Length: 192
Length: 226
Image 1 (spheres, chains in turn red, yellow):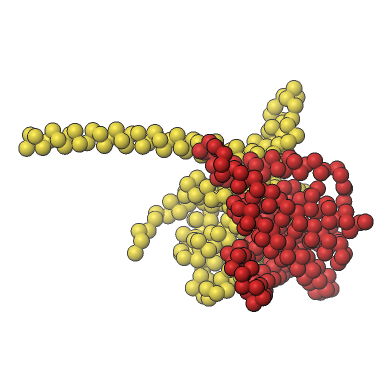
Image 2 (cartoon, chains in turn green, yellow):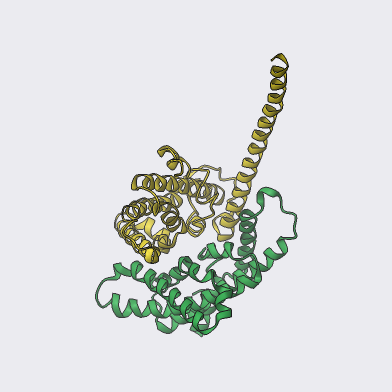
């Protein structure tokens, strides 16, 4: 039950994008079309889950026993960069079509603050291993949900007559604001 | 050989023309997340500027030593080092501020403004120029965060930098300090600034056009005399 709550809280109530403002860059940059937003969400989720596992192990098995917690940021970001590189290589070997579809977005995941944010939150909230795993899956699901909804709205927005100064980033931010308002409906549902 | 830009320009271009937040739409996460008050915004911008300035300078110094295949990883390690320094100093000196900014201080590591400047500027220019460029971008970031934080603080909690500026009769808009308010305020600010720029450009174009209209007339008259 506790684990399901952690999952729902990360995915809906404390959505990474709309409540914590993590991963705004791809959220605004790659949300033009649903066909690229959804795979991007899935790839990010995959990296998030791997990051949750690996950084938890590194923090609790290496950094804490040797009292070098101050190396947290340097080691985490290296782990993320290495993981993204690794995922890119695996996808290239296993599935060429998927690699071509994701191609440009994959390296960008390294600078997605949602990934590093996830690793930091896990340390901050003192989750155990299984909780971290659920937190990672939930955060990824929340990111995928937010970016897919955003892409759907922006596809419709193409047809709307937006005042010229508001085209591009401003209207996207305003839409995101309204989306954040909608997600506030989940607030208070679960408190973790 | 491309023309060298003056040193002063390297600084001032970051303030508005290439403002990281309003023009390049970079560094959105901290911009939106910490600007519930002007003070938080300023603190965040100063921390970011510190990291930006030192990492740009160092990267520019060693730009010829880094093989291009591993440059991004090297940049990130340099940036992460300075972020660790800032985080430890803030935790020791300003514990309350450090708590308020929470995980967003370590997240400076993945702030696209810093990596963006490293890749686009510091990797190709001299240390002095990179230093000025980073200072300019940092100031631009500070302007954006302070103004956004100021607006949200005034309307959302009636205060500015902790001092009450609006009367008690004004009911604070709770939405301004909630996440939704951050998106809406920044979106409206950007749209407003864009429309101001648009209007000025149109006026300038009209002025230029008027000049052009006059010039041929003068030329024709001179031609007749000759």
